[in-house]
Image (cartoon, rainbow, N blue to C red; front, side, top):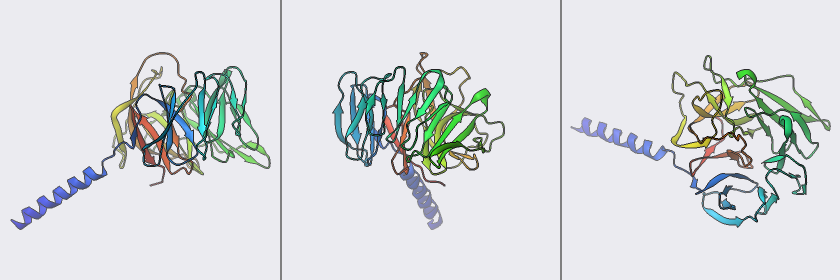
Amino acid sequence: MLRKTTIASLILLVALVSITRAEQPWAKCTGFVGFVECLKKGCVAYDNHQSVVVLNERGVVESTMKLQKGSYPAYVDSDGTLHFYKTKTSGEVSPRGEVTESADYEIKMQGSIPVGYGPGAYVTVYAPGLSLGMHAADRFSGVAVDPAGETIAVVACPFNRTYVRIAKFVSEQWAWLESVPTPDIAMEGSGVLLLPGHNDVRFIGPNRIAFLAQIDEPKVAPKDVIDLTATPIEGKATDKGMRPLYLLYCDLKTGFSRIKARLRFARNGGADYGNGLGSFTVSPDQKWLFLTTGDQIWRLSCEEG
């Protein structure tokens, strides 16, 4: 009798631990459009009511800032000041928050560093030391810049073969490294394809980046993968077929990519693949990654292991 009671107690304990460890949304944001870069603790979301919602490190709404018609949020600095530019497709934001006019440019901030996307898949990273321009991005590619503006990683997917090009700012100039890592998830025949409209790439450490990608379904379920499939992320259809969607953490030295979370994608039609605000964001200290499924905001650790 004692043995049965002990076994039952252990089963109950395991069940309680499992419930305790179940992932819970960090916050909710009704009408979520995308993230705005934040240089303070917590994160900032942009909703379809033309307002910026600042959430503190506990996921509680700290303040809401209304935007004037025609203005577009860029980032919130460490003092809580919102920097913005006047139109969605015209204007460049310098690292100091100054605005200059430039036609046919879309801005995606990474921290306080603007990344401008222009015609012909031309990208300009307005780094503090020296800007770097490159023909580097299409709708299946992404660009990441580290917070110091001294390392740039370009994830490209030509012909279904994904690779990462890395540039370093050394001796007052940019230099492309000869080493070209190939994201590898240690699964035979598994291609990695960035998802159009959600093809952000972000640094989560000196030699690590994060991105959302479609990959072949693993034959064996990886351990410690967070299941975020209950509510989908939305986007446009791709012309290369839909495969399971995952959040990957990639080591730039080895190319090895660890699966952090599994997601579900919902097509919402249309042909516009742009996403000017970002499908996820990273805290200034690179300890946390924020992403949404539906109107739920998740805060995931960027730590290794």
